Length: 330
Image (cartoon, rainbow, N blue to C red; front, side, top):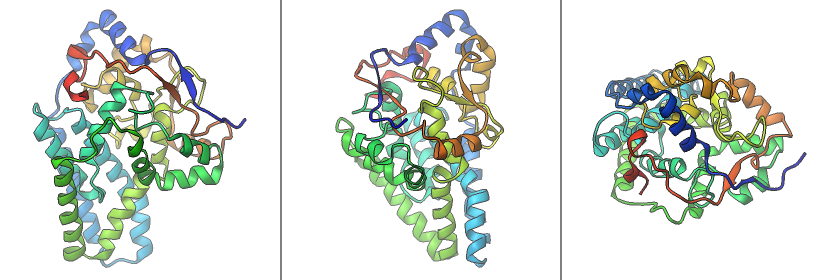
């Protein structure tokens, strides 16, 4: 059945409610909140890996460059997006500035300057989940109407997902889109991409560009964007986790309910939230395969871009001692 609008909710977003319940019945979960400075070395290693692979491909056939980008580069870049996500929540270092610098380091192989902007829009997503004028994760009304549940439309939507996200910025008028940090992020990326082109070669640059688009687009990894908040089982549960094997190379980003409930818990401790409070998570729908979801999204007429919950509520999330500091949502 073709949908013509989003699912509207008069209820508050579910995570703040569940967080309070979990901390009341399982107070030991609070001990998982903290930083993981070792994540910085993960960032450094993946960035070096991607540049090294691009150098190895500098004189290889074009088909090998693209195949390697799809089979290897996409996973590396997706992992870097997860690292940027960690930096956005200040889960590596104590200060905001070193986390932001680490995020820009992770951004280097990802071609386009996205680390600083992601931080700004993603924290609003947590604070105002489902509020259309503040949550960049929600599709535009025209975007959902255009793509709806058509196979070709959904395939193109995934392929050009980075462009789609840029087109959503215009509706988020309460968020300042550009400042000095954005300019620095842009400058670093221009220098990095120019250096790859000049010192390694055009095929190396093609590899990093292709890896970027595959990592968040027309690839099983792209199912992550569907997994997190699209209504695939009912019109009640608006956040889904993924517990499949790819969490190993995606640094547990699939634990999305757990992350929204406790955004100040770093990636390596997220599985311990689920195991520590099974009564709250074992009863929720969850995905076991991004690949299955990828094809289900493309071919199912039951899933469209309108398969999202939206709400009018604008009250800030009272996170204080249980999650990310309130000032990060200002």
